[in-house]
Image (cartoon, rainbow, N blue to C red; front, side):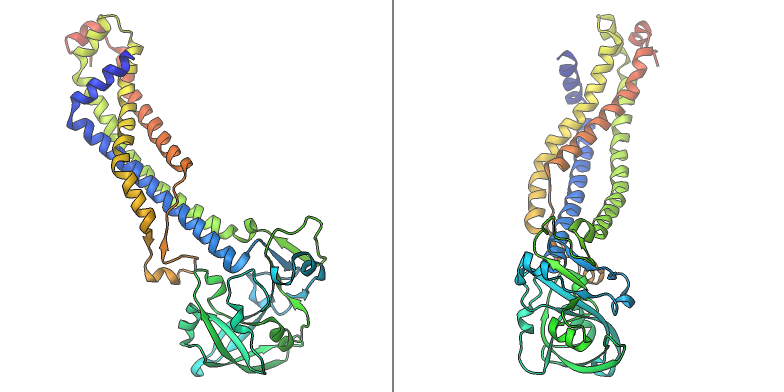
Length: 390
């Protein structure tokens, strides 16, 4: 308690010097929590959107299906397992068949991936109701990115060419029945969606699919031959790795900011010990042990971090609340990054994030304050009282 009272009195007596150290430490708290909250919010938003539009609760892949090899799509298909439909129900699964194709918008040529999706599915947010039409006309859905790339509008007719299962080229016109907006580029860029039964007929692949999106976790006994189940952790691994890479990149900024703050504390403690030699010698002469005096200066450093928490809370809590309420607006160019980014990212602040940041800065500040305080152990009380110990 004596060390705590002395440390508090000395900090209050330092005035402006104490305030500047506390201010820079509070800014460090605020920036680290804000930046990590942004990344956590982005991660949650991206995972949620990806599950709603692309992965749901997992996917069954045909044995030859490789999403990173479009040239294998012509062979990447298999019979839809009846046990999957029976286990989930017809609306709780979304079989999808893929094929490479070429379109000719306004006389131009562009390679795309044509995807057939079951119009009865209720798993993904893709608006399949617009694909439920009668007659020989083939309806198609495209995303806003694809529409911008093609210069297409709803109702346009576009010529599409593809190869069937025998390698024979065929072509027809599809009508843009709808244009949907999504934050997930994997279901938008370079893709056209048509009814599954139409694509199966066009490819001469009756009752076949490349992968099946599941609306819930599969029963443990469900293991269709020739199909492999991929859960969300596997499907979203690239997204998680990207967020981790961004976090590591941001960590370098945190290290630099924290280092500047700790350097200020270190310099303050060194100067304080040099200017207070007589006080240190007097305390030792009055009976305080060297360890106790070292404890006073180390406590002073720790109190910088504690006072910084209080100051940071004064402006940080309303500031972070405002950021959470309004979110981080993203530039229009972010839509072309190929990442699931919404127009406004809402940060997410967890108790672990706040507590971890406080403990990190508190421990680092305490260590930095202890290092110069070790010199007190080498002081001669007589020389210290005379101001000649250092």
